[in-house]
Image 1 (cartoon, rainbow, N blue to C red):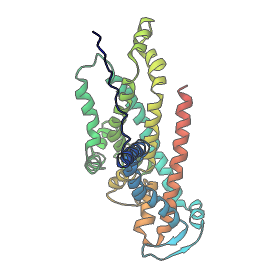
Image 2 (cartoon, rainbow, N blue to C red):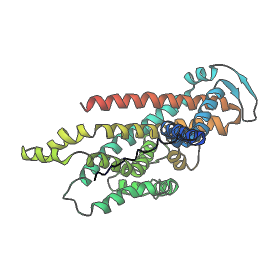
Image 3 (tube, rainbow, N blue to C red):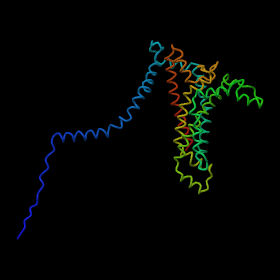
Image 4 (tube, one colour):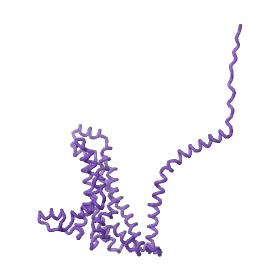
Length: 323
């Protein structure tokens, strides 16, 4: 007796309906669009805000600098006359000298001290490192107005702490806001006290990113901590240090609040403009004097170009010295 088996063959699948096929094509298209364009949508809010509050004011200021503009709204196109005026403006050059003087007295010691403190906080043998890292950042959290009030009391002529200390070595009381060099020293001390901790933490973060194996190998080879700092830490820290230098340069060239509060709100920076910075002069010409808003805009663009030149110079200097 023989058995015959029959194999059932599957019937061919029915083709998808037009609606299903259309939905599949739409899904694939949306998926490609999501992968390709969604990153731009995520970062679009930043560029939108920057365009409204950053790019547009810059372009508007550039347009104003080409006009004899007042805050009432009347303006006349004068081309580059405002920039020509800058070249022969003694107040502009005085503000430029003041800005660079305060910048040199604040930025250079500030970066050297921040580098020293960051290296100290990076040591493994240091106890309570979290406490010291928080404490060193506290001056940056304090309001700049409070800092100005405290330092204004410290630098008072008659009852200030610093004049009292100088009296012990036979130095007469210093009129800190009455002379150029003394006002530069007082303002730069405010800037150093407030921003050294901020730069210290940035440099500390850069140091902690350096592989520990390099230090262990150098210690095995007999390298001293000082040699490890010069041969390992500084070269590896170069990108972070360049960032800190450029950031400090931008802040130093835009210095406004500290000298303004040090002079008790006097926008000209002392009786003889001893410590008026470029930012203060721009505010005087563009806001205080309503009839010279166009010239104030030219000062603003001059500051912008100076920041670019000085930042580029510092970048090349630090990059070359770190080789």
